[in-house]
Image (cartoon, rainbow, N blue to C red; front, side, top):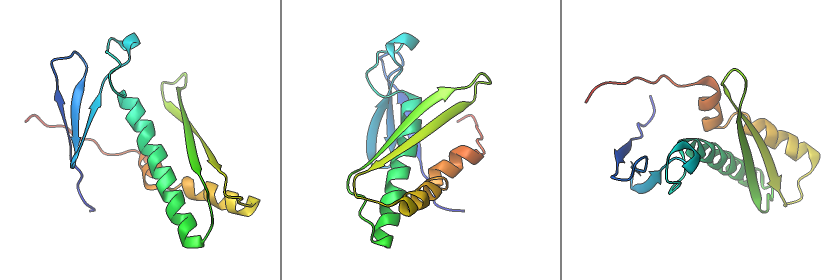
Length: 132
């Protein structure tokens, strides 16, 4: 099994606002006003999208560097919606101004289908819980 990563979330005195520690990084999460939060930080699904977009961009940058391709500025846009069955659906759109040809774009689209976070989201994870 690979490295274990640890995230710790602690409530604050401000309704849904929570402090998050991931490694040496500190973040916060909240809910939007429409869901009773204060909209003071990204919501959990915002981080869900952020993790996928970051993994996508980093993976593509690594791949392009190995191939000697110039991506130029890379942008990854994600749109999250929920189907009638309640399942999340994500559409990912990639932009790069480095002058890639059609064959390079086709390969990049193959690569993004198998980034580590894409696979984890698509295939699911085993999640267990215990009382501390």
